[in-house]
Length: 102
Image (cartoon, rainbow, N blue to C red):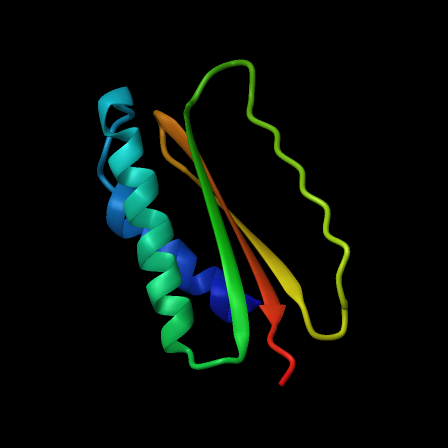
């Protein structure tokens, strides 16, 4: 999962790096992050189906909390959560990798 973390972190940095929070750009940013992340993951050529989610929120005193739960084969499937932030926003990307059994 470390490889997935690195790829997603690069995608987030490429889209949000140097940006300040702007509500008008959120849809474009989140779509770009999930599409680029999926593209990188598929290029790894592993026998997995991927689910990628992305949330971007404005930084505030209230914080930002997420949770997920999966019922799957822990020996072959996995998940990775990437947390990214700058002075104006927080971003959380979740990758779920489900092995394709042939």
